[in-house]
Amino acid sequence: MSKANDLIAEYRSTGTLGLLPAGHFIDGAFSQPAHNRTMESFDPGSATPFARFTAGTKEDIDQAVASSRRAFDTVWRDTAPVERSRILQRASALILENLDLLAVVETLDSGKALQEAMGDVRGAARAFEYYAGACDKLQGDSFPLGPDYVGYTIHEPVGVTAHIIPWNFPISTAARGFAPALAAGCTIVAKPAEQTPFTALLLADLLFKAGLPEGVCNVVTGTGAETGAPLTAHPDVDHITFTGSVQTGRTVMKAAAEDITRVVLELGGKSPVVVLADCDREQAVSGVLGAIYENAGQICSAGSRLVIEKSIHDDFVAELVARTKALKLGHGLGNPDVGPVNSSEHLGKINGFLDRARADGSDIVTGGSVTEDPATGCGWFFEPTIVDAVSADNELAREEIFGPVLTVQIADDADHALALANDCQYGLVAGIYTSDFAKAHRLARGIDAGQIYINEYFAGGIEVPFGGNKKSGFGREKGLEGLVSYCKTKSIAARIG
Ligand code: NAI
Ligand code: MG
Picture (cartoon, rainbow, N blue to C red):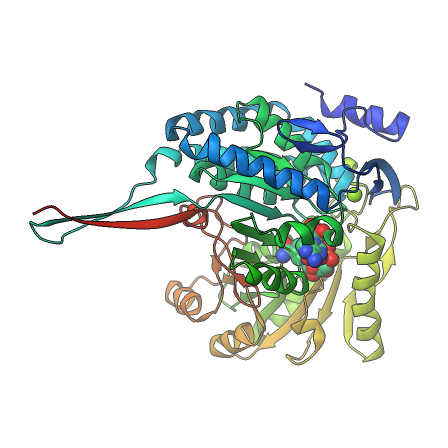
């Protein structure tokens, strides 16, 4: 067990970490790829490469899918649910035992603040704990068909499942897909994002050490084009869980259509945080700041649109601006308030939105520019930014920026706030701040989103189903509903009389 401080010291003196895995994880071991090609992973906080990893190909995917198929057919689908449960419980404990290593690696790969990475790793352990408890409770129904029949359902595992993972929450997205898939009796081939390949590999190794039979969880690293595409098009994959952009989600859905493969798509968002005049002011201000600046705004469910009632707008935005200006930027390992964004390409994309906003005369009340780590002058940073009084047709109110950029929309009253909240192509989550219980629940009912947070943004955990409406995708992860994605219901009706 390596401690965070030792790992950080090692990274500072060598520029890398000795414990990083190499190769894909296939059939219970780190394995050599078909072709010996590698790619660099960058530390976004310093904008320097810190490690190389395998750039996989279709041959590696074929090998991983064959391994998962074998493991499904010969072992995992018929492993007793209580035994699956025990393995997932051990996995949860092992993740926590390796908390520091996983969190430091996650911070180096993604850029996020170490405390946030630790929260993500704890959340991953919690996902395995939660679904460990569900393995032996996947009960079916029985149907009253009269004295001459019996009718019942059983939940069968769907088979080999593909998991395409993004770079913003690498270990948490992996865990929230792997844990229910394994609980249901499915096997896995995962493809982490090429920006953040390492924690999925480490997780697969820990699962194996927890007792998962070989081939049940395979991880292949590489680009979307060379490994993601062959995985989603593979005829022997039975289900795909994809988290990422709308554009790639569309490509994945088309690939899945070829073999009628099942898909869950968790795509983008432009989630509103509705703040009404009767809110608890401190609760709302800190809620709005956390909703947009956590993980430097690179969260599908970030609260990126503040929809605020006109009568409190001026004071509220002034307070937000003052608190935003006080935020400390820095390398993730130093636990800043706001870390870097994940890549130079992504930084350029965020900056493009602000360049256009400047050109069209938008009211950028704080931030708005590319910057760097004040301690080192390095890294891919964007200033925490607020753009005020944005009209509903502006791209700042319509498009996902995926950075620390808050768009403010002004509402006359609660009804107008509801209309603004829903005037959007996305429907992932929404926040509501008000002390009026009835108004809160009327808004919660009226907003078209998969999840609503009242008086605490990001409230709830693995117990609560999560997923989008409209262009945010479909299907639900987390909660008991998250298990359903990995099951096929079989109905059996028999004549007995
Ligand atoms: P992306 O959707 O292209 O990448 C997500 C995953 O899909 C990665 O593992 C990638 O390798 C894989 N992928 C790419 N092309 C593929 C293909 N043809 N077939 C199968 N898999 C493929 O997202 P990208 O380019 O990294 O980010 C672009 C934008 O997407 C961001 O600016 C953000 O707006 C959004 N995004 C949303 C996320 C979310 O949590 N919903 C996560 C990441 C990005
Ligand atoms: Mg990286």
